[in-house]
Image (cartoon, rainbow, N blue to C red; front, side, top):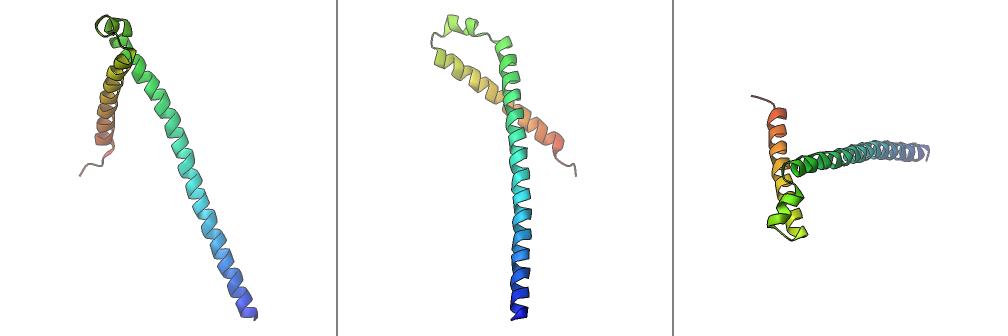
Length: 97
């Protein structure tokens, strides 16, 4: 009977250690994701300001009278700039053979 109790305690101890390790991994992932989200919001504002300085809404409103269409055009431009940034960053980070 003593050996069963020791075995049971060892199993519980292993389970607790695995749980703690998994909890730490998930917390690290969560915190990293939160910082990434904040950085993405800041970059979004920076890119949006850059695009707005190049193409002002007032200029677009003389040609396009719908606010949603103007926002769509700006969103497409911001997306193109973001994709170019992602591609460039990925190429810079990739290990060279």
